[in-house]
Image (cartoon, rainbow, N blue to C red; front, top):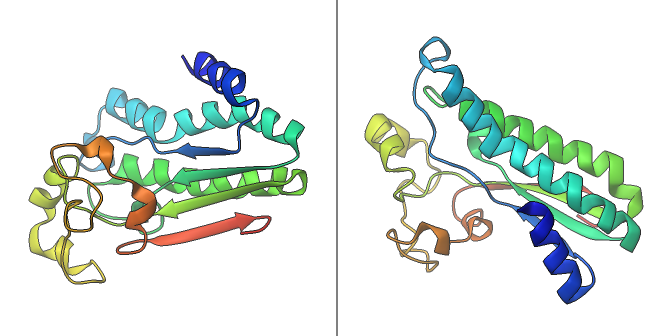
Length: 182
């Protein structure tokens, strides 16, 4: 499927200017000893391996072009450890380091790599996290309250595919930049 998507893009546009890796699923709550190997593997595959596979296919095209932008959507959970978000936090933390490695490996080839690390937005995907964390979790959010995607003008909670995490960083997260022209 990935190879077909890249081929279709190259056939239509002749190049790939930007790659945004925005895969993620709801965290599997629990301590390390309580998570199944299946849940661990699925989380790492969705939140980390997918970005690797996309970059592995797209980066050679960008190197050939002499330029490109890669944006990996990570999470604040990849910077600050949080109870019950272990596999998710590990995957998102590894994605941050992966982004740094991309910048080191390909910055001189004109490729800019960035990781965006949003905080919490109350959506269908994060509802279970808020249910587990309650008020303590909400207190950790810098703006003091939890927004939903409709409140910040990027969709509604019934259509999670419609919101764009790159906009969320303005309200809740941090943007980490590495590489050329960041």
